[in-house]
Length: 176
Image 1: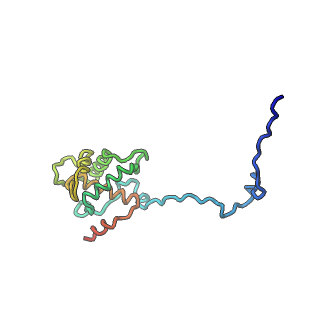
Image 2: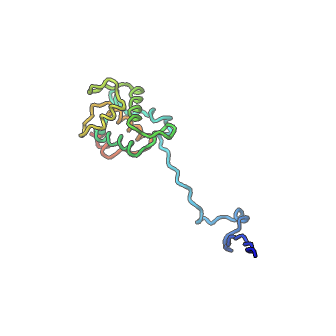
Image 3: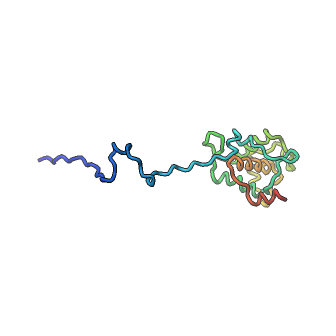
């Protein structure tokens, strides 16, 4: 009257496969070993410096020479925003925003010293000057902005921190 009880299903085993108990005693086939995931090489700058802000750039007469024009600096900074990159050396959760770029550039200015600007800017870089710099156009549109100079310094320090190479255009500009 009632349904007969089913036997629990057992795993079919292949005779060529070792049992669970014998797996520890048998050396695994070297071809079947899973490859370890590649570890990302840590750039040298991260070993030398505790923070990207401590990286020292070559200076000429007390200022870091800018080898990129304003369009290039704008493009590089906007790339940080578009990629939603995480700010290094933080808690690992904050992403780049115009406000954080303004705060970082202001912090760089406070740490490295003020630079004379040709624009009507008294306070140096800020979120507002970054926004204004992003709205400019042309090769040197916004070149007199503190966001241009300190944005360049910020991106150079990030480039070194992350171990990226200089671009071909940048190397050509250094030679001139």
